[in-house]
Amino acid sequence: MQNTNIRFWVLVSIVAISGFSQGMLLPLIAVIFETSGVSSFLNGLNATALYIGVLLASPFMEQPLRKFGYKPIILIGGLIVIISLALFPVWQSFWFWFVLRLLIGIGDHALHFGTQTWITDFSPANKRGRNISLYGLFFGIGFAIGPLMTPLVHINEALPFILSSVLCLISWSFLFLLKNEHPEQDVEMNSFFDTMKRFSAAWKYGWVAFLPPLSYGFLEASLNGSFPVYALRIGLDVKNVSFLLVSFAIGGIVFQLPLGILSDKYGRRKTLIAILTLGFISFTTAGFLEQSFFLLALCLFIAGMFVGSTFSLGISYMADLMPKNLLPTGNIMCGIFFSLGSLIGPSFGGLFIQYIKNISFFSIISFLYLAILLLILFKGRKTSMVIANQH
Image 1 (cartoon, rainbow, N blue to C red):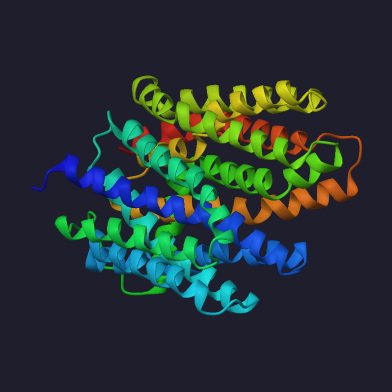
Image 2 (cartoon, rainbow, N blue to C red):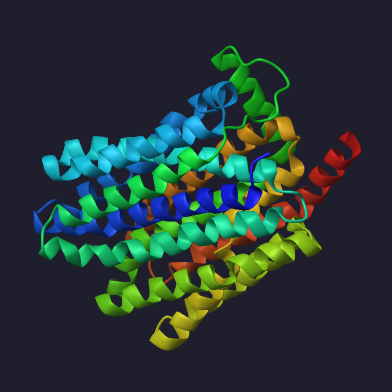
């Protein structure tokens, strides 16, 4: 039996470096394309490649994980990310970089799927919220530090890509310290049809737990992709927009672990209901305080404190509802719903800004959290009770 602490910290350090590379790529490539004269539409289209990669890879992840175990999946995913990052400086071309981002989406998804499922598998129920929140915390810290690499482009355009690739390689090498393990098996998975049947079973058990990751994907992508456009149109300058986004991110990082621990103590469903209610109130209030930069920053910090943990709490909630043999499938579906939210967020946000005037951008986020809150309130209890009876 390998040391659980060493295994846990190796896995979360890999996730932190993955977050760092993702956080670096978004603004870095946007800046490079903007200075090269690429249109904002194409710039945004290129950014979706990562999420398209996640969605394309998702149906094919579970079978190799069950066959080969956690470690090979994480090793292969990490290697794809390292090689793709190193290839960016080779040729600056829109479609070449689109393919590289697609590959990073596939590699990152394999890496996150493997680490996430492994952690939910070996974590006892009374520490699951804490462990998954630490996973989310380390990814969030890495994602927040990543954009700080963007100014290095002025020294040498290749430097941020090479630095990120080397850091990924160092963290990836620690995987060789770990002994491979396999998820709990029940039946052989021999076909794509078997995978689809498991998706259907996982949906039946835990659909309500996939909604928080969906909402977080929508929120993160629309805040980073659409909100800056809206903010500039209501008279905020670029520096203030950056500060507002950082305020939200810091709120999420600071409260990630305490909320995970609270969910272990009071239950995932109760914690989710509380944070979705407070998130709804925070974003609704933000819509009325847009003209005051400091009050808006405070609202976004408070919103980040609560809804910044919706992804990690959603995974913990899913692990509570799902039979252990379906944990890999449940983790895949959390990733799929997060990616769907990430794809829908910027386009929906862009349409809202373009066609709906005199209504705050934050109202679409408030409405989303209210809808998910009501579903968990009225359907979540029923789901929990059904599963309790089945066990």
